[in-house]
Image (cartoon, rainbow, N blue to C red):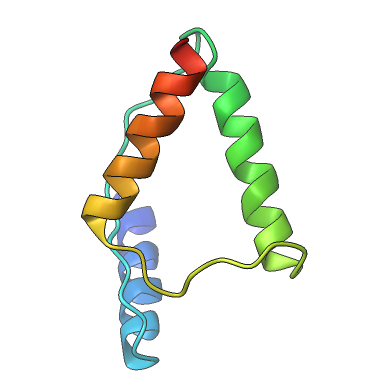
Length: 79
């Protein structure tokens, strides 16, 4: 795990050199939790679509905005 942390820290530092702020946080695994596998698959697909230019994404997202969007998605998924 320390090697992975160091690699991620190097990526974060490289992004900062480009004036791109990134926050790396650990999120515990969610295997076996209902709908989380689906959410993971959808998140990976969206990231790929953004990478390929099929979907545009803002260059800056505040933590508060990310929390708000996540809460909205969670509430809609739960309902």
